[in-house]
Length: 105
Image 1 (cartoon, rainbow, N blue to C red):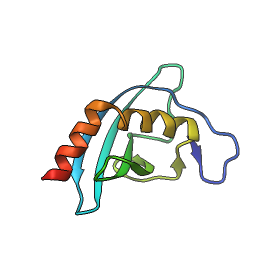
Image 2: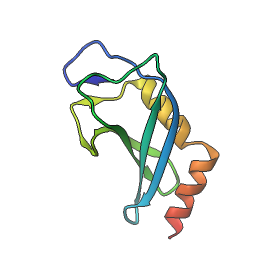
Image 3: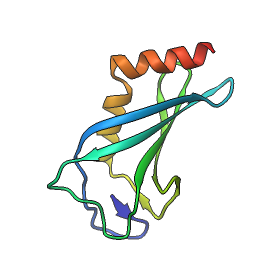
Image 4: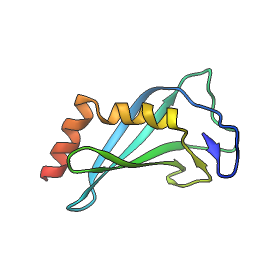
């Protein structure tokens, strides 16, 4: 993660995810993720409750992945490495099935 304007990111390694999947409308599915962190990559001191919001198409493709702190936008963003970890989870079979189910309802 890095704060907007910073040049040196502090990369987080995720060990697991808890997902909530909700259909926003006829075009988008919101996937909110609670992130489990590897002990070797702690959060920055000023982050209280880090989660991620991934906006996906009804076909399950993640279009946007944003960092949230206490459920709202924050001054941090994910690095490419962190987004790759999140995207790999989203593209996994289990979560793709949940996204497809939300898209049908």
